[in-house]
Image (cartoon, rainbow, N blue to C red):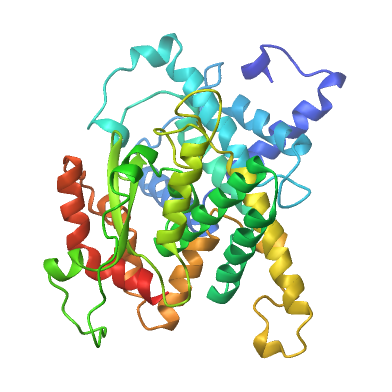
Length: 423
């Protein structure tokens, strides 16, 4: 209390003192018991050997510590206090990962303050730099506190689960039927966008946020590319596709524009997908429909999954709106399944908690990966998300013009086209 407040505690500080004790207990449990026991034994041996030889033990002084808070005790108390009042999304109590935001906020405040600004030295460039710092949130004690806090609180997440491919296809079909049936143009356009979004994320094995990177101007540029074409006779997994074969395959181009993982700066990524899949996904139909409704809204550039705001670009759509629509139609798929008596014919059993298990963040991608693994093509899943390989390799993708990127995308079609066609 004297270190943090420069005073002795009073009766009004009962909760404050409780949090100080809790923070110390968490820090004590931040290291393994065996590690601490080993250090204790080593210290005793050093002291015993030194005394036996009339030597002063080579042990760092244990105090007194100076007043102040170089270890981040004040931040630890703030985090503990937040954990008592914050409301969790998955559970009644908040998760440790949510509390981590306070630590990053404190760190940013420190870095923008007088001491942090003076710490200008760093190793490396970009987002991977290493910077020596005296920030209390990076102290050894605080690292121990955080490990102890995580161990005590535990983790409970509700990750998105994959869907059976038939359930995903039926969900998209219901969205299409609802859009065609409604008399409200705004509602119809929203449904068409959600249907296109789910189709592209599933066919391209995209993470949920990556789907919103689809660039409307580039979509319109490549809209007619891959129209028509033909699929080679007797196409098998061992068939070698040449670049000429790929150019003649019926395909659509998904141009994503954004700042992807493992890269710095904004760049295009082009993915060439089959126009239609074996499970009745229809990327070509949805791409053309997306361009059509965007033009109706007066949008020719900007995010393909955007909203009208009185400009030609619009704003990126709210993911929560897409997520809510996705779950709404998944419930309809489940209702249809419940009316079927034969469990083998149900697309989505009633045992699945739709609201808790599925969402746009990961369900489309996991649905694709699950389908690939069942088809014996699991090794192709990583190749579909090729920018994740860039991240692991520690390299930055070379900058190209759009036509060069399309050539790169064609060379990858033996993977991207095959996978999207096999779904």
